[in-house]
Length: 298
Image (cartoon, rainbow, N blue to C red; front, side):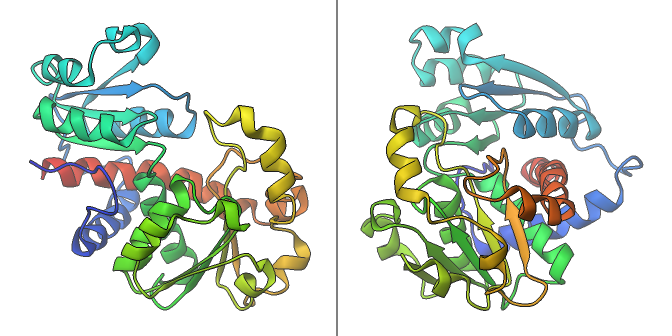
């Protein structure tokens, strides 16, 4: 049985296959020849609030012929302390697959182990694999390929999004630069497992120099609100703005996984100038996740 729990555990060949399926599924939207989820009901188990992830998965499941059942952790026994392995063993007997958005990576791993149904990590504090697959597809659409390109992530380099970028760059043919203050750089343990395609620096100008993509994310992720003041102070110099874009390659993309806090990690001017790319990136969550769903039940 297949799962998508992390990019660290996903072979490069599977990433390439999912990206190829994404292109086909996007082109066929509205007239799919096959409905791989026909007759299935998938559960969306969310402990973290969401806009893009929830909408894209609910729409995607339905467009592939299935039904989606949204379950907030606050509305089920999981939110009252039931162990994830017990929730998994019950739901595994009732639904056909699970999409989980939560805090601990171990919860997703345990659900997959005990539920005995295809399980997707829709975001944990450790990884955000669906986002990066959609991002790679967007780069492929906009630049023709991600191979040989340089992606520069700017901001909190230790959060789930850049960590998933690390695993992708370790397995695929592109370079990743992470520009972050030292306290916000990936852990030594993660970097020890990363490949030679990854560099980490606190020099934002050097990281942006000649890059094909400048990418950022929020400075204060969900669950880190108590650190807001500290984070804003530490990350204030790590913003995608017009001056930084001038250092990137001609025609470089500015990307953001959203939601964006304009004037912090990205300026309003840059976001609006690159809105077509950024909102195509958001749309591509739908197509990439439909490909993931189809790949899991293939």
